[in-house]
Structures are given as structure tokens and as C-alpha cells.
Image (cartoon, rainbow, N blue to C red):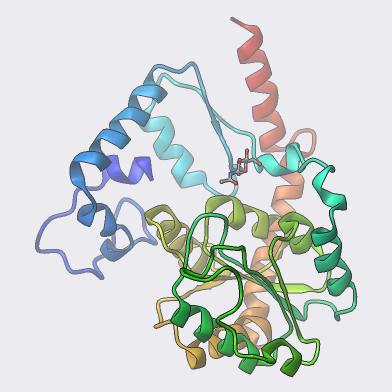
Length: 306
Ligand SMILES: *[C@@H]1O[C@H](CO)[C@@H](O)[C@H](O)[C@H]1NC(C)=O
């Protein structure tokens, strides 16, 4: 995001579809939101990060070389004198603490998944920050139900504006699904994505979720809300080509269609093949001799040299 802001200079007469030449998969509209936000604050925010980077003795990058070669190249160019260490994916280096893994909420999603057939379930989670309105919530619920694809949906208390939890759902909604859906308040995401029953991930496209999905070889449906998520979604759909970018109206028929495209159609199979290839590269880069492993060794040497 930071690099995009520095290297891209929009001009007034560009159309929204104009490609951003510095970042091939992006169009002006994928980053246009930067233009519409409070400019002074955005500028202050970006300069603060920039100052921090320039003052630091190194940058730890939560990614791996094969995934973001071009971005890393640009970062090296911009911060010539600052060493950059792509040692990610970080969650693979330091797994989530096991303390929370035994909780009941956690057991519930995993034991439900245990009863489903391989690659049959779409996992839905919009992360820990955003909220959606009641109408969108209901469209999602009906779209998912009508797709007839089994689903595990994380609805955190507070996700639906003005509701405590899932009260906006019509009475008997879950019963009508006859076991095909499971709604939970929280799920152990990395374990869920690694579960053999999960075949797709409908996500808000935060960076952690995107990386976690890639690491487990799960194709995505991207529903971004914030500027960095828009960029991630565009890379997922048009650069790595391992998911769909929801540029549709949030409407039940469109949702049903998107889920079926990723979960059962040939298009989804192709995405799965591509993301499995990225997953293999993750496994390789973390091993001795792999790029992230080497970066980690460089980082250790760097720290010891002070
Ligand atoms: C993203 O993952 C990193 C590494 O696993 C973690 O330290 C960080 O807190 C996560 N960020 C969010 C927003 O969950």
C-alpha cells in the first residue's frame, strides 16, 4: 500500500478502468479510494510509516519471495539502504498459541467439519473489524443457503449493525438447512482452512487471511471493504488468479452464483490447481535453503552484527 501511494500519481482524466502501469493487475478504481479519503490524514499516515522505515535498521516483511517478487523489487529500489527480510508467512513460523485451541467454540467448528466430505464446505469470515448492515447480512444468508453448498460461517457478535448476533435471520432458517450450515461466533481460522472438508473461503481479503488461505491451498471469494483489502482482492483475482473478486452487488442470486463458480465449476478447479502450486512454494520456502529460511538467517546475522 505504502509503495503504491509513493509510486502512483493519478491524473484527473484517467478513467476508472485505466491500468496502473507500475502495478500491473491494478486499475485506477482499485486504489481510487486513496484519492477520496481525507488527503491530509492519508498523507500524514503514509509519511509517518515512511519515516519509521527510513529510521529503522531493517524491515521484516510478512510474505515470501515467490509470491511478491515484483513488490519486493520495488521496495528494494525505494529503500535502497534498508535491508528487507521476507521471512513469512509469519503464522507458519509461530503458530497460534494452543491455549485457545481447546475452547468449546473451537471444538464445535472442527467437529462439524469432521462430518463433511472433502473440499465440500465454503468457510465464510469477514475478519475482526468490519460491520455489515442487516440487509446485506440477509442477502448473504439467502445466497449461501440457495447455493446448496455446505457452509461454516463466522458471525462475530457485532458483525451485523444494530443486532446482538444472528437475530435478523428468519425463524427456522438454520433448521431449514438440515445440517448444511453451521454458524459460530468464532473459529480457529488456520485450523479451519487446513481442514480437508474446506474447499473455499469467502473473505474480506485482509492480508493475514489471504496468506492463510494461500498456505492451505484454499481458493477465495474476495469481499474487500478497506483500501488495502481492495488491492489484495485484485491480486488474488487477477494476478495469482486463485479467487473471484466480488465486484457484484451484494445480492442473493449473485452470491449463489459466485459460490458455485468457486466450489463446483471448472473455473474453481483451475483456481484450486493454481493455489496448490503457491502452497507448495510456501512449504518449500520455509525449509532449510528456501528463500524465507535464508532471509531469517540473514536477519539473525544482521541482528548479531550490532
Ligand atoms: C496477522 O498475523 C501476524 C503474524 O501471525 C500477527 O502478529 C498479527 O497480529 C495478525 N494481525 C491481525 C490483524 O490479526
